[in-house]
Length: 448
Ligand SMILES: Nc1ncnc2c1ncn2[C@@H]1O[C@H](COP(=O)(O)OP(=O)(O)OP(=O)(O)O)[C@@H](O)[C@H]1O
Ligand SMILES: [Mg+2]
Image 1 (cartoon, rainbow, N blue to C red):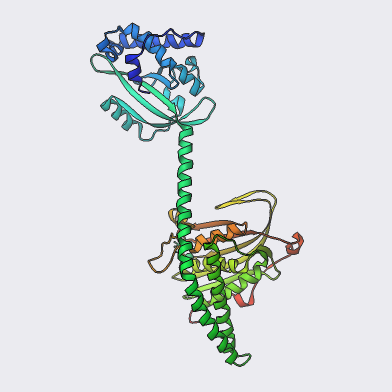
Image 2 (cartoon, rainbow, N blue to C red):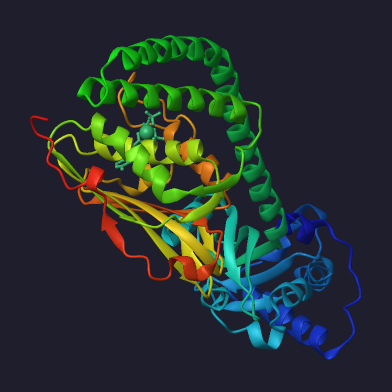
């Protein structure tokens, strides 16, 4: 509402009955008398052309201000409330008796969108100010109001009071925020869809290339004498190529919006196998440590998916340690009796396999951390990263019913912990002790 307009044009209405209304009327009378006493005819100024008397206006204005649903208050230049409308009583919960005489910004615990002295300077320059404020109601509720302030001046143009009209827009803001969130999700879905189209386009050719590699590896394997390093190398190359083919299939599955095949899967065996490949891709002075229980820890999942999670997390860690460092991969069973909040979700009570990948690399600042799971977000130079690694990890973990926790500090390294619900008898894992795997032993790889 434009309070100034209402004051200027409204017809005279009878004051509302009831003692509170009378109190409000009295406070309005006092307020408008105060304005007159201050040597002004401010109210008359508001309706100059109709030539009404300020006293007649005073009564009419009180009634009009009291009729509006918006909260109206008038305050002195020092902020002391002198008039408090029925709408203000309704919105804020304080009666006129309680509010009049209080300093408005202190009463509302106002949160301003800009420094108050800037707002007041604009108010005096323009004669009005409009903006959104956060106020606290009598019952402690925080509301957002669309606020309009108008300066009332005396004949000598000296500002003598401020008329403030506040409209509760909390619900509208919430709906706007929800809409923005939905639009954001839609954009994300569109990005994922484009990943899907991209993946579908290349997966077929990729499979052909891997098929060729696999075929030649098999020939090398068959030609190599038993128990020779060459035969072992060929075997490892075959395993890697087969895994790559599975990954291509996996990408296609996601592109078509289907989940991975779920069956009881041993996290320990799968991670150990993936670490073999990680080890072969280590470069520079990075030491790999693995602490993996020697008993199976079973989850409902898909070995290829778990493999992808390990490869992506370890790949990122290795990239983050260009100057060397240590990469620690551990699997630990965890039993929770109560909810536990982690960085990217809430763990409900139950049993989990926790896969953690910790590095001593460059770490991440808050701005990077906030975006790491966004498809296509990468800080790597063009051609070095697609920004899909962690987006895929998040999709896989969500598919497994798991939760991700990320901790990182610039210069202090990063730890990604993946919690996946376990299946199987609770006692099966109770005396499990992490052990260093022989194939994933502590190693320094300089010169390997
Ligand atoms: N362990 C880590 N240490 C430091 N930064 C990391 C780490 N893991 C991820 N990041 C940051 O998160 C970004 C996104 O990672 P993500 O795996 O999704 O994509 P990428 O590694 O850049 O590319 P791609 O995985 O497709 O090769 C990275 O570019 C990097 O900035
Ligand atoms: Mg990556």
